[in-house]
Length: 265
Image 1 (tube, rainbow, N blue to C red):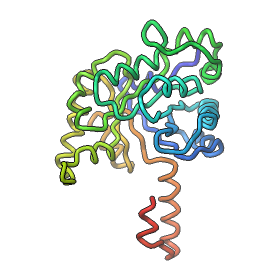
Image 2 (image 1 turned 60 degrees about the vertical axis):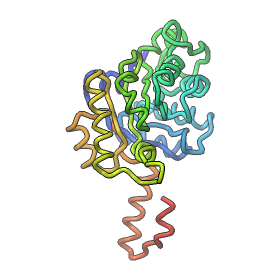
Image 3 (image 1 turned 45 degrees about the vertical axis):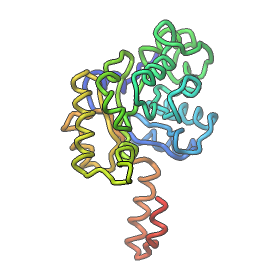
Image 4 (image 1 turned 135 degrees about the horizontal axis):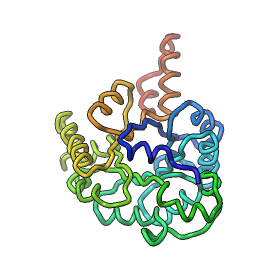
């Protein structure tokens, strides 16, 4: 059975920088899988990607030698099982705030006796280049389980969550965490308060030996976070990359859109 190089690298303490896929398109996925990122996450939480398209994207990414991951809309058994049975080599679970929510997600991603994922299907074995029987036997060792910390409650429970067996990495969604930190009157956290919250995540990861990661928007930010000890990092998304480059070209032509048009992105 094909090994999961991203899982092995994270376990060895090495940083892994990939990106997010927001377009439900096989051609786009194929192009991005050939760029050189070690992993790509197909975002089924915030993008209109259906199950069949997601499965085709997982196959395209895996065939290119890249690791296909899937972010599910929420951490329940059916959604996690469906992306893994569709061929994802790992799952990213959003809004994990409690130990019980973490346990549900971990069990859903693991076959018995470790978890309660149901046996069946042959598609994931194709992406791991093995027989279905071999996949069932070794999937628990190769499928990535990544949980997201996106709220103050999740940070408060971080050490207990990160200590659970079966977690390969933690991923911070900065936007959600920032918005979840708003006070009842709508007051936003200061940059210092937000950074302190991120550092609590990093500290919990280091204490428990669990790799932690974060979504970033620039090479400088990636390098800074890696120097701090973050490992699983997303750099922008293919959507962000496309729009940013297009905007640079339009600006160079002196044809910048109005502020209201920019707000859409």
